[in-house]
Every structure is written in structure tokens, then in C-alpha cells.
Image (cartoon, rainbow, N blue to C red; front, top):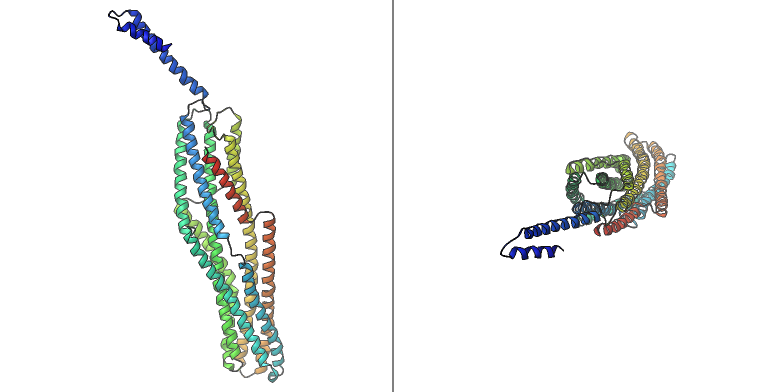
Length: 478
């Protein structure tokens, strides 16, 4: 109809004498064209899911999609970083147990022989079986060498693992740089998203968009807190291990030297004094090893948090209750007729993703907390047992040194003090043998309990990585 009116107007206008009817036809045609375009535009707006055209919806979808994808990448990196840190060599626990148990058993064998021979010597010094005592000292030296070598092996493995992690970009410096860069990208996207929402404050779904923005910011805080927790935990536990292995190797090296000098002291009595001094030093080192390792780990944990906060220019802080509250608020806004901001993934679908992520995060956090409490309990028991064991060895060395330097010519007195020292030492060696076995059985039982319930950190990380893959597929389809 519009085309016909325009042709009629043009035909009349082309005549030599233009009449008012022609102008009226042109004007009518123009008005009809404008009315038609307005009707089409109104129809398009009415058919739009938001009622405000597609521009806001498209921009909102694009920014939300980029925020979610950046968050997925950050969480995946954090989980892989954690997976890399919790991964241990398959037979490490058994290998280390065998090395330490061998050392403790050899020391216990020496103490049992020493009790017998020193008991004889305190009454009849000439009837002491030097060959049996020498074999016992050699056994103690061999056990100390094995135990020390076990610690050196684990220390070397940690160094090798650190090199592998650095090659894959999971060392602390590289990981912090990656997280900082990814976090800056998320922050820039959130600022753009907030500006877009603020510019459309008259949109029916404005409040829903505001609440969803708060949910995204809480998830951002969760990502940072999770990485900060993983980073600090990994670094502190590794620091505890490395210092413990180093001090344990030093203690056993000193002990092996002391046993060697004591063995030579059977034919060269002047070496018995230095041998007992080494036992005092070794026992003292064994006493403070768990305490120093725990204190060093605490310092490293604190430094890890502070260095990350300095690099990110903020302190990692997250309240799970706040994310839950914002998620529930978003759920309340789903009841109104507010249109759809992302037609390809309605708010109900996004809420389901946020809810599942929140639940998986809580399970991970709860499991990590339980594991850490268990490890702290084991570390506490080790801190109590370690000084007790080291103290017995130090006491044995003190008694032997007093007997040698104070009662140089009173052989029976020396044997009597060495006899008492051997009794004390046997108590410490027995505690070490039983303690090592109890530690292994308790750790295996606890790990089996978690594995049966699929609550091991590695299992939960695998679950969350699988969830991230599915989430990423959904988000990329927006």
C-alpha cells in the first residue's frame, strides 16, 4: 500500500501542473511509512525477552560469560596447583616408615645389649663381652645411617618435585603472577558489568542483575581465598617436611658418628668421652626437631599470606555465609516477572551452577579442614613424642659423659652410669619403634576412611574439576 501511494504521488508530481492532491498523497505515504516502521520496531521490542531490545541482553550475556570463564580458569588453576602439591610418591610413606623403623629397631637392639653388658660390668668389669657390645654399636651405627639416608632421599625427592612444579608453572612465584593477572581481568570485567547494569537501572530485571553481581563478587572472593589457602598450606607443609628431613638427617649423622666413636672406644677408651658428647648433641637436636619444624612452617604460612596480599593489593577474605545469603537473595528474585537477562541460560540455570559450585567448595573446605586438623594432631603428637625420645638419648649421653669425665678411673661407677643410661635409652628407642608403627597405621586408617567416603582432597579436586568442565561447556554455549 505504501509503495502504491508513493508511485501515485510521484506520478502526479511529474505532471506539468502539480496539484495539491499530489502533495497530499506524498505526505500520506510518508506518514504511512513512518507508522509502519514504528509498528515493526514496537513489535520487535514486544517480542524481545526483556522488553528493552537486545542490546542490553547481549552485552549483559557477553560480560557475564567472560566473568564466569575467567573465574573457571582461575579455579581450575588453583585446583591443579593444589593437586600438584598434594601428590605424593606412591610408596613414600611406607619407604620412610621402613627407614625410620629400621633405625629405631637397631638402636633398640643396641640398648638391649648395652643393658645386659653394662649390667655385668657394674659388678664384674672384666666379664663384659666386648664383641657383643661392639656388634651392638655397629648395629646402632647402621640403623642411624639408614634412617638418615631415608630422610636425605625424601629431601632429594622434594627438590626434584619442586623442579618439576616450576617447569609446569606451579612454583609459587609463577602461580602468584598468574593469579594476579587473572584476578585483574575479572575485576575489569566486573567493573564493566556494574557500569552496564547501572546504565539500565530502569530495566525490570535490574535488581536481579545487581544481586547476581554480588554473587559473582563473592565467588571471586572464594577463588582468591581458596588459592591463598592452598598456597599457604602447601608452602608451610613443604617447609615443615624439608626442615624435618634435614634435621632428622643431621641427628642421625651425629648419632652414627657417636656409635662409630663408641665402637672404637672399646679399644681406645679416650674416645668414649667424645662419643657421649655427640649423643648429647644428637639427642638435643632430636628434641627440638619437631618444634623447630612446626615453628618454621608457621612462619612460612604467615609469609605466604602476607606476600600474596601484597602482590594482590588486598587481603584474601571470604565468608561462605555471605555467598549463601546472596545466592538465596538471587533465588528470591526469580519469582517476579522480570524477564530474562540471558535467554540462552535463564537465571534459574545460573543459580543452579552457583549453588553447585558453592556446595562443592564447602565440601572441599570442610574436608581440607578435617585433614589439616588431623595432620595438626599428628604433628602435635610428634612434637610431644619427638622431644621425649630425643631427651632419653640426651640423658643417656649425659650419664655416659659424667661417668667418663668424673669417674675416669672408677670403672664400676662408669658401667653403673652407662647401665642407667642404657635403660633410659631403651625407653626412648621403644617409644620410637611403637610410635612409628602407630603413625603408619593411624595414617593409613584415616586415609582409607576418607577414600571410602570419597572425601580425600585429591578425590574432591577431581570432582570439582569435572564440574568445571561441564560448567565451562554450558557457559561457552551462551
